Amino acid sequence: MSDIAILKEMIKETATVSLENDLYGRNKVILKEPKPPNYYVTIYGMPNDDDVIIINADEFKSPDTIFKGNSGECKRADFIIIANTAKKKVILCIEMKASKGGSMRDIIAQLKGAECFVAYCRQIGQSFWDHQNFLKDYEWRFISIKNITQKTKTRFDPNQNLVSELKILTKKGSSFQFNDLVYCQK
Image 1: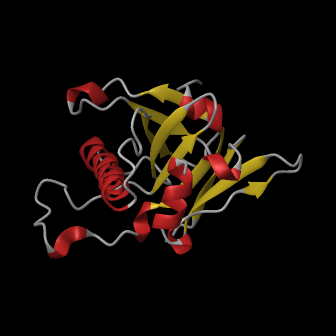
Image 2: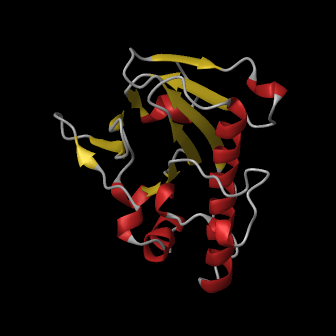
């Protein structure tokens, strides 16, 4: 059984985002933030449904009933895309902001929280699905999308190394190509 098939057995459909077809019949996904100001990002060129799962990490209840949250350990990014195609095994952790909002420290905490969520899923797959190589050897991408209503503009944040060991791709705009996110391209 593939990693994606296990994840689709493990995670409720209400916590995932379905693929849609674009005008040319190719796969796309629309990542929506329902809370005001009701913004969304479209990612075109998504892999086939059997090769990808899109998780709405906001559906995962905050662990603040256990943890104090003083170090950001209760935060998590908005979406996690896990893809296992013939060409690439990749995990994209995506945090979205409608404007410039959010300090780099908060964004890093949210992206790290998504990384912890995937680590939790990995352990569940190894323990309960008896799949010892579950979610192993994937490349990670940490993506902060800001200013969603502006024209697409891509850059690596030059200040991110000052606060984190994560390599964060900061993007501006409302639509992107999947491969651009995977290969950190402009």
